[in-house]
Length: 370
Ligand SMILES: Cc1ncc(COP(=O)(O)O)c(C=O)c1O
Image (cartoon, rainbow, N blue to C red):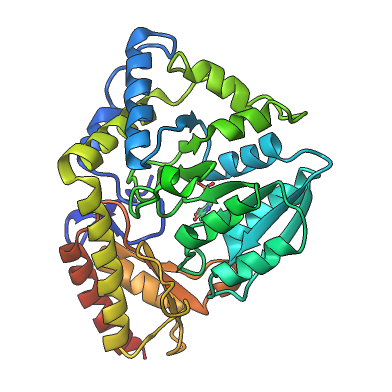
């Protein structure tokens, strides 16, 4: 099998500047290799409790936090199945591929789904949100905080209160920003805030997490055909015992507790958010200095992934493979943005120094290719 993480030239690991999965630190890899007890043991329950309490701190919430054996898409589907009744309408705000995905989950689950979108590269502004909400009665509203395809960060601090004023429940997909950007769940009144862990948490894929409000559980109890694997009510019942209804990936949860401890008690949440802000800012400065062009509308650029327009008409696959030879991976655009944009992920444990080193090599490659 090819040793995918080994960079022969530098004799070191490949550095992932990707929007997930990202580089997993050694301290987590070591934890994953430890022996396990069963998921009904006291040792497991203690670990589970540490994880969910850590998530509450990270999300600034007293809401219950749940752990799912799935990627983020699983919780996106859970929100739809648990919260939208057959005679209700759900509104999906979409600014890119993952907003479209959530809407498709609504449609494919037979829910009465309405999509309100803007041109890719733009954000859902408070004015746009208000206008969309005024058109009809929606029971649940779905929105991304960070749209990973376009690299746009929606102004959720302003949009969420507008949604709450209508009485609807609000679900926020924070997959590519949770643990990198502050999401103040209780202050904003977010009902479900979800993410998978292979992005800003810097854990291997396979696990997703969310906070769930009291109102959400009350609503779920009234919804029929919630299914079995992703039933919020069953998850809540088991969560009271600090367990999951089915067998969870125990090593992954150990990894989550390790990372939460690092984030909350070693690096510190505010410092972590600041670092991601600096990574975003520095990447945008580099884009400006290189005479390149950011894809997102100014003012809404993500601090965890920079989507750059291919304004120089570069051969993106060639640029990506040349950078791979130097030991770094960046990625092409997503979906309809393939070859029109490329993306630099700067999330998880990436430090400014790592970014500077990668940008130095990328500068040389771009100058050579253009
Ligand atoms: C904003 C957003 N939502 C949802 C997803 C889907 O996540 P997963 O692959 O963990 O299901 C992604 C993945 O990149 C994402 O970036």
